[in-house]
Image (spheres, rainbow, N blue to C red):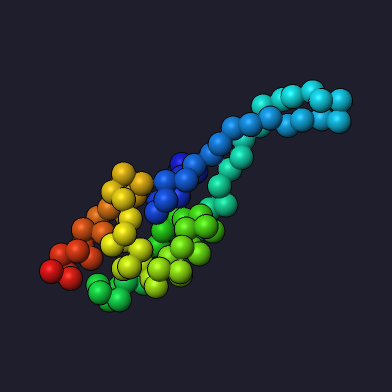
Length: 93
């Protein structure tokens, strides 16, 4: 299971630990991923997604999963999320 947000594509970043003596060692900054169940009003069902805390706030801000998917770029979405987006678009048409 990769450490990538399914909705925003946010993944690990790299950087340095810097000691008091200014010694630098490599480290990784991992995204804050959580397993969340989000409900689609258009489809009338729930989806379990592994998303970052920032993505969860964005979904709430935009008014739910359906509105988030309408504005989301296809390149950022995972294969699972892209399928959900296409299903929502079909149901709305």
